[in-house]
Image (cartoon, rainbow, N blue to C red; front, top):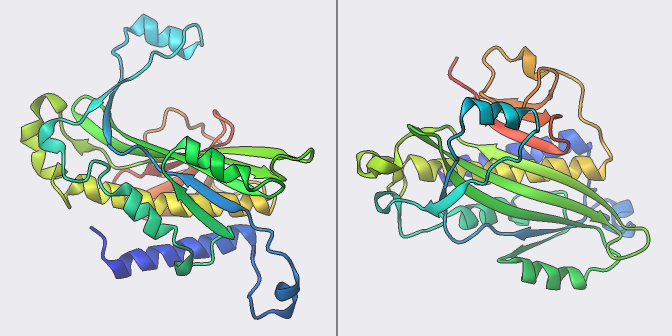
Length: 286
């Protein structure tokens, strides 16, 4: 797992990204103007993911069914969700994602683009919290995760369905929706032969490292996208998906999709095929 110092460095890098995208979304408390101005940043309410990581299996489709799906002639069949095989489980059913994400979003570690943070367990708690925030600006992030079965590999996927609400519950209310999706590097493993790959799923193993990285990445994605929305900023012009020397496998990406951020081994893409979708994808080895 990443060390505490490495995690703090990543968080600081995330804070720098926020400033780059929003150009300074908050003034220093020592600034006399800041002392007189109201804090207009939204409150961030995070609905944590389910208690346990589950295995998601995609139905097998014939060539004809896949063609009909691509043409929009049939609805996408539902995935099946089932518990992880016993050799892949640990004492932390959620693989520690809630704990890691809570630490990554801690306001004491960076100047995030929200003035308050609430981490809640379910939608009922979210609704009760929102009832007391009438007239305020709120960002609501509902999180989910799964382990996708890819046949001979599995891939950890985490997502945040973010709704930014201005003037909540008033006649001036407006809403902006952003979908964030983080995909980890796939792991060679088959559920039918779970014991063979058990080492990758032990506590502190490859899967837990994927979860730790996803928590940090999601915290940065949330910060950057909320900051950009508050600044009413459009996606920056620059490199496109087609410009990547070694592009990731991405069925939802188009050649002209904008690259929002690049770092070693990972890239953020604004996927225009699905408006409002931001993908954080692992880059293949060069």
